[in-house]
Image (tube, rainbow, N blue to C red; front, side, top):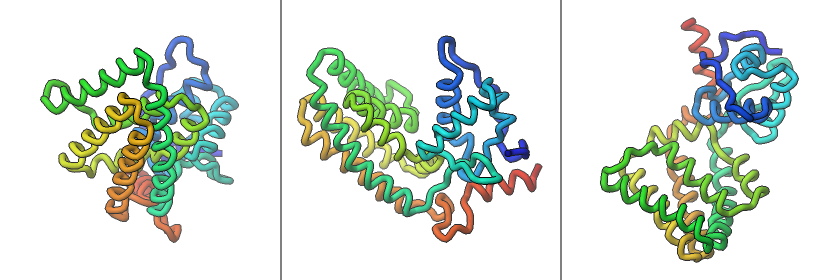
Length: 253
């Protein structure tokens, strides 16, 4: 049972969209909060606060926490409850190695499914947006645009089992820190790679789309390998950046 509400960051009440079931709303909202870095590695998720913020019962919240645990976003620890998962450098490298294969496969499937008019229009819209970003006609949110790009490829691939496996291999809080470290040249190269992948998909070239996506994830893995040690949990279990930050919040409260 979790009792220390002070351990969690302050977050406003999250309103549920009309027509959304309480369980689905809570899963989506809490997942997004973790992916956005509102809750970071080592943060304890206090049940009393979450039931209030999410507007769900304790029984529903516990179902939500079990779902997030199965997806690798949190850990359920005896006597501590739910804790946002932390990642070692090795964890990140291994996850991205697997994503090279799975997302490459997803891009190949997307190319096979791109013959119909509606997918082609959506792909062209994304290519037009890339051109507009380059020309300075549109603002860009790199974290959001990158997430949207990879989700679009999974949606176009239209394989629910594959999409679920890829989601379980995503890196929530580490991802936001990673994007903070990138330089303009990295952004430009990533944008170029997105354009090449979308073009291969539009051309129906499954083999090339898969190769380009795998190379894109591989380059991301190489960039992760160069991030500073404080962005990862300690391989020997001495603690994580999230746990240190949590301790700092308690000390300064």
